[in-house]
Length: 554
Image 1 (cartoon, rainbow, N blue to C red):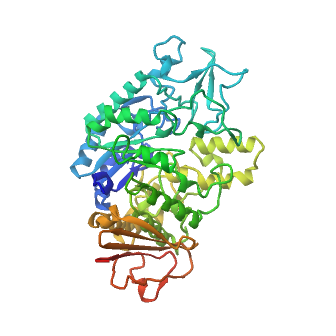
Image 2: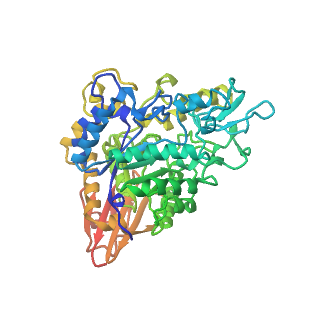
């Protein structure tokens, strides 16, 4: 298999607003990140993926950009960014920026001009359509509730916004838009950044003819815009004009991606992106019609799905490995166990299962501590636009009652991932000396960095070891994958093979003891175990036990 630095890297995602506040205004910032780089160096990660830090009115926490080449006021200045970039590079840590180019903010100068008149030179930078029968041009719904079209009185037309009304979609059909985007990307690369995570990049090519979509809930499914007719043409052009000119890492957030589409986006010929984020495994604990649900993640479908991607991309594309990010509730609360007895064991079990697969692992801030979902007492506690809008629309429409909807939205809200990083047991978890923009998770006195750095058996030190093992053993990066016991409802076990080496990964995702047959691995070395014991001795896996065995000369 072709080797590459980004295949061997471990990525750490920072959500700047919630990571570390250096000036006491309750909002994390760039200088706060710089102050914690030594912590990340100690963890052992190679790359930081930085959620958006560009100028933004913050309707969707920075994913609504009003200036791609300036910094959000609350986060600092471009000088602060340059210092952070240099400090990261001094420590051998790369910085990957979040690229949000499916849409801009409605406060971006391009859109201000675009909406000013029908004959403005930037009118065609966005997607404008006439209404149909006095209503929206199509039945599409937006990701944040309501229709995906906004009527604009000034020119008596509608503009498309697949997300918030303050996030109008760019018109990628327009070569001038593509040139603006590619030139901006080039300037960031010349500044010295190390790559891009591309927000909802699978949505940039809209379906020809703008047809109505199948109705899901109250509106037509906006998924009709995923993997559109020209998306691969656009990305090949982006690669040719920008990406191929720099030694950078690229990962596309590709809603609605299939295995066959992923092989095109992340192909081994390197003509588009290095890898994609797919969401199939993260949707397994969703409700029938939408993501809102309190059900736990089912293990057998999870194994089946992750194995499909492991086998399907082997040798033809590259996987990104993740359970957590700024859009997902905490994985310990979905797949593990929040109780004091099993929280740390389950966090280590989940990490083992993911980090031993083929692909590039992503760690989301606080995941390395086993941070959990937070507590919401009312809708007033939410800060996330998606959660607030969904609650209001679903309850006010009469489709659901408050009693039914609130626990589901509380469990799956993106705010669960956005509570402040838990640095220590002092007030506000050491995140800020001011009032945090969103409440700190009440369990911060139990779960925090200061405590975990002191304890050898902590989740932090376990992640540190997993990251180190990946650097020391090529089989973890490049070996092929084979699922064992596909129908077992408690054990996730698989084998990795590279040349004459074999790796056996066994994880018990239950509170009860499970038997496992270790035959053939009597001479293997225990690489890591979250119980610090050899499970082969009794052939029993304890609750949430994970163990990894390496067999040489297999």
